Image 1 (spheres, rainbow, N blue to C red):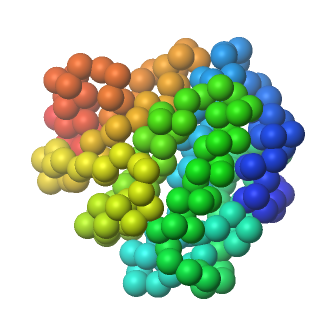
Image 2: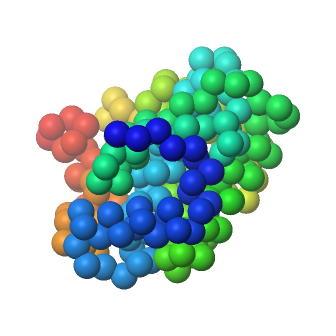
Image 3: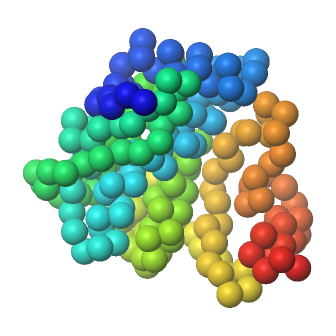
Length: 199
């Protein structure tokens, strides 16, 4: 495992290498598909330090120069670390970090920015849900701006993210995620209920 600066995401050469490693894991697929799959995982790791600190009533700098990523030899992003306090307002700094990453992914892979922004929303919403603070999702996303509004709904006793994004994993021969928006609502509800309640 290697520690790399999160600014690497905006380096087209580095990003092409990561997409190439993703192709080894997932098989042949269009670059736009691989870029979307990669960002679905990477965005969740990238926002984790900021939203987890926020859920604890703390603040860390979300800018790319302030974040270090733990990357495996096969290209998977396992964790992210940020220690310094933010230099300014959290929302605009997160917006700059996300938009810089999204612009490079769009340039390198052809994945469309609106889809990548929707993935970022769902990553933030999920991370706050896991941290026990889903009520912070809407104000945080509003402060970032330019991203879809986060949505949740209840499945039995559990709250889940009503996803706005699709990771496209099904386009590399794997099953659709339980919460995938590209399935009939009744089927998604059935699968989520089974996952949450076992019924």
